[in-house]
Image 1 (tube, rainbow, N blue to C red):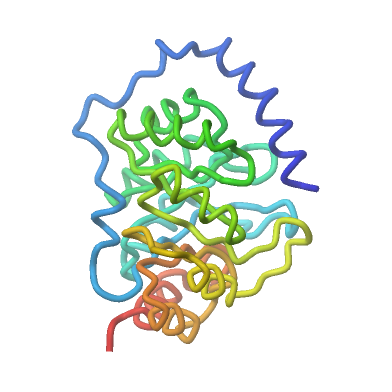
Image 2: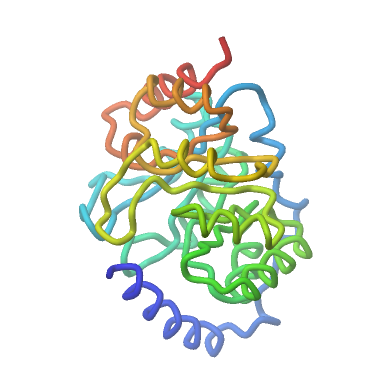
Length: 260
């Protein structure tokens, strides 16, 4: 499974990174703390988290003229509340520089989209100027989830805990997640079903303060559907990155998520 390959590579890469740049050498920006992702998603309706993603393992290069700064500005013009930026280099052709450039260009809070396995990765995110980190329940134990949530809080970062099924969502909540990301993509075969969000929410005894739907969101109608579910935000990648006019596409999605 591709996720297993990514995690194995990340563990090897982590050891290398720790040697090249020990934890003490990771200096957070001297400027003010990054803007809060949670606060940016607190508005009415479904807020848009617009993703910067150059490539994917399943589809390859998504945008030949990929320019993080230009895309970030376009998403901002389209009304995005926040950004998500892939920083994985091997599988997604991302880079820390992409996140730094996007934040500088837009001023929007940025989620570091990567495969966080260790406290070192959280410190890296803070040093990049990220506002939040992604914690994927499928690749972390309960103890690891709880630890990394604590590290993120200690560094002033939000954490989006991603679940792919009901069991993972319950684990996320039990570990104290305040932001639950529901990925509509099945990591076993990469199929996508937007109704996964609804099924998982219906099975939970309670909801966290913020629910973010991920994957399979392409149109204003999709955003309207999520609004009816009471979802706070939608993370959209390929539909935006591959659009001829990313600002116009972002605007379309934002309009679809607005309250009636």
